[in-house]
Amino acid sequence: MKKARLATAWLDGCSGCHMSLLDIDEALAVVAPQIDLLYGPLVDAQEFPQDIDVAIVEGAVSSHDDLEKIRLIRRNSRILVALGDCAVTGNVPAMRNSIAVKTILERVYIEGADIDKGVPTEVVPTLLKQALPLHDVVKVDLHVPGCPPSARMILFVLKELLEGRIPDLKSSARFG
Amino acid sequence: MSSQITVRIDGVLCTATEGETIFEVAEANGKHIPSLCHMEGVSSAGSCRLCLVEVAGIDRLLPACTTPAQRGMAVTTTSDRLSSHRRLALELMFVERNHICAVCVSNGHCELQALAQSLGVTHVRYPYNSPRLSVDVSHPRFVLDHNRCILCSRCVRVCDEIEGAHVWDIGGRGIGSRVVADLDRPWGESQACTACGKCVQVCPTGALVEKGYAVEEMTRSKAAIARLAVKKGATP
Image (cartoon, rainbow over all chains, first blue to last red; front, side, top):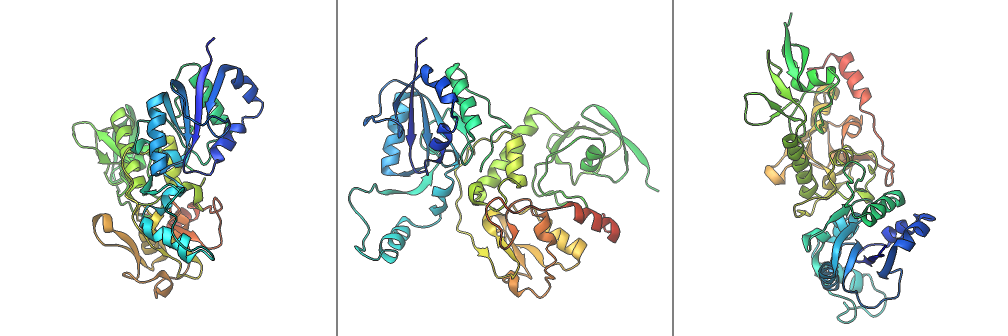
């Protein structure tokens, strides 16, 4: 059987969803032979590859860098999964959404800094006005809410996707 | 004495007392209709629109909690149309304010969160409103977090009808509506509040909470309110 080409990505989130993915423990050994993991925090690829079957994305879209990444991921992937509340709702990263970006940056980098006071203009990606759920900027094929989604649910989602089905999470998944 | 009537709920003939609401008749006959504002022991407000039902011969959907059952009425409590309206109502509650389940004291014990799960809301299709809202921590024992309020008005009704203090009202209009204490002053400065905590016990979300609880720790009991209502003879 042809292996599924899988990628994961970590935008504005805490990596807890990737931790929960690893928490499927011994089931990793069941899933591993069926997939080629080609991109993400768990592997060392630099460029997001072409022709991905399933992209699983954690985190909200918070910066211009995130925005470019998610658009590229969408272009190169057949199925895009929003994994966890940040990707699904904005969640904690979106708690800044009612505050102006300038105010936040000054609070953190000037008022909150002891040395080198000043808002960075290089290296750190510029923030979008608000942290957004993935489906606000690209088409999402499956939403898996939860903070984080349980390992059991992630395993169920993986198994279903590998069987070529979009899993029905109605009534089994919840926010938070 | 009120007369007995017969209504049909989801095709099943049910006996009801005239004056009972569709919601009450349905519950008495083992039919659960989802709701966030209805509560046993206090009057109905019809504010959450989750209990909408179809009534044969009437085009628009009616809230079960404020519609009296009438002789010969045929009510449908579950259909694709109703599910779609209920999901819509829930999604609009989620976009209206800032419901961040992951950091809420009521996470895991929240009626809004649980209903979203049972109605299969896995994401919200509309852009979040993300309003800047205040948190009132002026009361010595309790907190009012407007970010999590869905304006169900249970607090307003329980304080008025059971405690008899009438601290709470809904102030403002439309999207600017807020729960206000003593005609809009900080809760801690309320002259009328007896600090009984009934409003906190009936809040369906994490809007009214006791101080000192961390994420997921806030649990509540509505059962005591229903018992008090019976003792007080306040059941409408």
